[in-house]
Image (cartoon, rainbow, N blue to C red; front, side, top):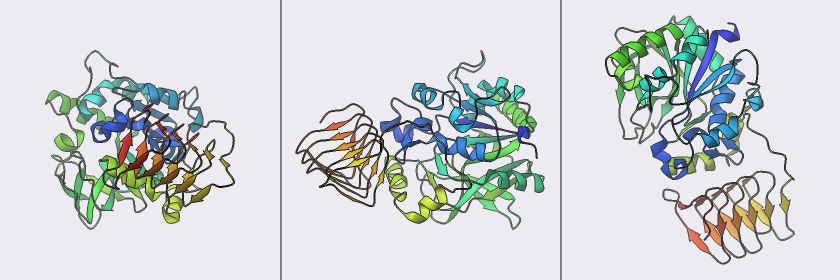
Length: 372
């Protein structure tokens, strides 16, 4: 299939409210992850690795950080004359103001959908961390002559996602029933926020849904059309993390400390691209002690760091102890401070001798630019 036959649409503000401490000033798509990435990097990289070079990002609010990160799309090879990366703001049309659901969001992006010229569209939520074989999903969609293909994972479903579809599948992976449940369930088939369908069908479903006051593509359209549409599932068997709470965000970052998960998520055949920043290598003092940690460049480590994720430019001074923490860009941990189960946003300062203790399910959170 030619690469121009498929376009991608990424929802930048997917479930922002579930990570509100990190999304008060940024979109879900631009939430930092894994020491040097943003959540949107996984969506863009998966699409680009599939040869898709026409991608629209639907924004809603707080998207200045996202604009700064993606820019013209050069780091994903999306700065091009034909196709490329498009930021689709919430006031794209006179009909669609600030949207309140995926149907409204797609109505606002209808100019992009009409003009992209692709045969197929991949809808992609930005709150999913996974390295997905998108070409295989497209091939499955075409082979099944499906109307809609939903990428799913088998395991414990997200707890707080009201829009996550729980799928009942037949032997040939056709979806016979779609339900929704806000309580996490073990060993179920749940969608991970990636959907494949034809551009013409998307236009038809969105137009009809909008006329009938539908808000949710999943709830109001797909779930009610399993008898009329051929909806199939495509299973992703690798690592998946769907952000549905601060604790899920914390656990997903901590999972990167496991070698098997790193190997799966950062597959060399399908690399994860991000905005690069030239910086010096991390410097380790003579009395530093670092174990099982994910540390970006530009850090200065003179204290102890264990089982932690450190973003670019973090400073840990002498005598300080950082354990089971996520410290974002330019965080400073001063002398003899002791941190355990802490998430700090960018440019935070933890003063000397400060002791901060959280738990895995309730991390101590430090806001952006906060000084303690």
